[in-house]
Image (cartoon, rainbow, N blue to C red; front, side, top):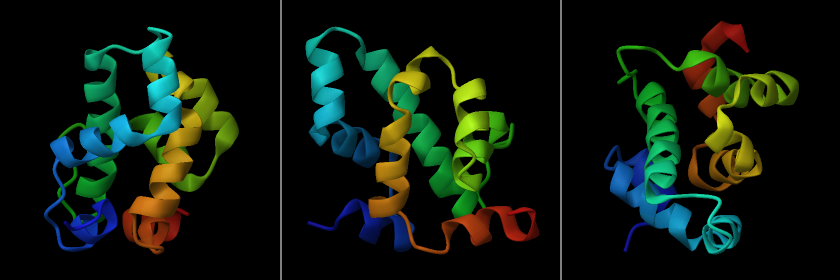
Length: 116
């Protein structure tokens, strides 16, 4: 079975793939156990992560990445914390895990170009 990174590179990654990956993460399991995250929250996180994938492959969502995801991609922790919604503020470290383990190393340059 292809990994999330392989699917990312092969342009076959879906929100369902990301959702399945999320449910395997210890932080998500812990927060779900404590009832701090709902299925709707998990779907929101998967959608945001999928937007990163779409931006990488020039399939940017119509509304763009927004301040939060741009800050995450720029590695601007202060801005990401300040612009995260309630759900994403709980899982901010998970974005680092996703970017490090599930995206190609050139994601920042490919998405932001000269803005980074």
